[in-house]
Length: 205
Image (cartoon, rainbow, N blue to C red; front, side, top):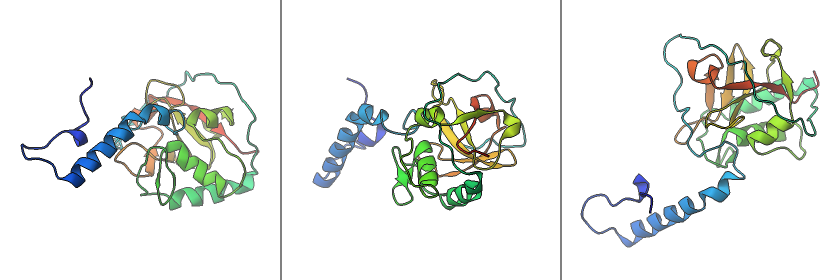
């Protein structure tokens, strides 16, 4: 049997209270249902390793060997909606990361944040997972990136397992990982540059 996560281990030698025991049982049930949640949640894992922004001013070399993916039913939003998307994304900064979340009240995972942003400017059926977003967006050269476009990363050993919204000046907004908050990051930080899976867009112009 695998070791229990730290939150489920007994701390000290005293008996837990009834309320504490119930809480631990609830956590255990949630952990057991994690595999099913993986199929629907946005990022590839509940806690990938992008926990901190890189310190200093060092720049990484942007990865250029992008994985290929079939384009299915591409989204075609008007380019006039780019700034509305950025404004809505900015409102989400400092919202806690929540695996499977897609609301300001409940928190966000990476693709839940993107779904929230675009559902507010062009209400319609939208992708949910990072892979679905990649399949619904057209590839771009990095020098074609504009505000509101999407950037993708491999942060878990799987292509297109993390994503964010480009805001210009080599930065993007994303929901990074368990225990974190929605924030900006540099596309050229050593961590993200080495895991870059390419830029894509859901805009016509």
